[in-house]
Image 1 (spheres, helix red, strand yellow):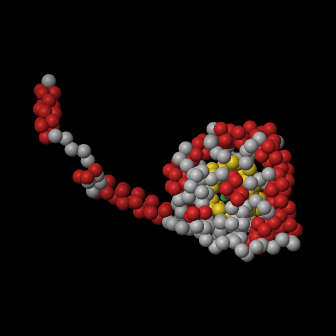
Image 2 (tube, rainbow, N blue to C red; image 1 turned 180 degrees about the horizontal axis):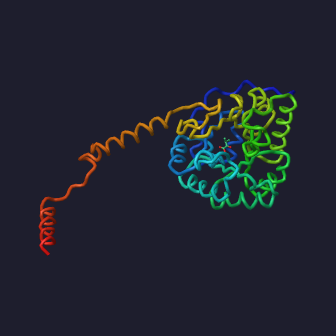
Length: 303
Ligand code: KIV
């Protein structure tokens, strides 16, 4: 490969560099090579509001929804209806972050008309301002049609979970020179098709660095090393909210599963022992009203 990463990226991301108004796809593009872009998933109103309040740039309503929120084994069964429902919950509580929706399996592969109709639903019913779709080559016509219609598209290459069977499992992609070259070609094709950014998932760090250097749009890495223009993680993984098998690239910033377990166990014990509710959790009633109530009750008994 002839493309080499640039080492001159600023190490910090001062808050003053981040816009307070709603983040747009133009802001994301403009961050190329400068401050790093922080992106996380969210699927419901309370977590989206928390993430947004931390000035995360992009909130992805990922089709990881199927595994993280709906208890399924993969992302393939997620429907456009389900995505629209969760997108509406997220966009209703976000005021700043750019909210991007994943286009679920078979919502775009069947051609530009289906892609437009389904992305249109995520825009109109879900309220998102961009979509993400997995793959390149065969889907470039769909991407062009969406971009031409005014729907910004984030690409996604490398490990594409909707193709996990074809890829032979959740494996690092682009590990040979040929595979890495194909990845770079796909990334360039996505840029030419009009994508405003591209997710690189599970790609060797030096390959991601070269793809990042070759593109004029930002790359957002997940398991793709530090040289991408931004990073994305699944919120529930980084919060340690569930005991999914966490891939190597996940950093756990909290152990919320442990905290939830401790809180629920304490609640159960206090309910069983009578320690909850305490005096501070109950509503009082004036003594004379109580006496009247009891007196009425005595009358009832006599009848
Ligand atoms: O669905 C998802 O959460 C994703 C991210 C992991 C990039 O596609």
